[in-house]
Image 1 (tube, one colour):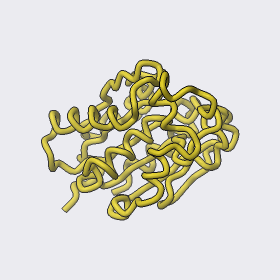
Image 2: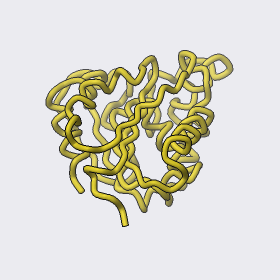
Image 3: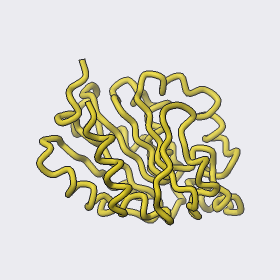
Length: 201
């Protein structure tokens, strides 16, 4: 049986050019909820590290902290959502994850990464539209069926373009009334929606 949301550990996965400090406002809003929050730092070397390698690092950090079986909730922002999804689908993470919240993540790719050379920026190339990684994840996502999946996106997102495609292939999707990519993790309206989703049992 899954533990209640108030006690289920929460893992927060940051995106490109971010650090765990990205989640400071969200974490302050969660204070007093009696749940463990873990925001690991995944060095991506400006997008040079392949996302599968970052997913392997995430797997090691989660297992080091809670072992192989403790049920968790997972939130990924931007590139972090694709890293988290790779962990869920390819590294067995879906077996222990109750809820996955994707925030502004390019699950269908983004045109902003399209012209970047893969030999130099392997991680960024993984986010190109039609990349081998995204095609693999979108071709067979049966593992996600056991996870409650939620997607939040911004219509006017210039980092994940087009913004309305920053959604998972299953689960509920919500357009957030903000103007920029970063506001998805900083604007009070967005934080209100995320907190509401995180606290539901």
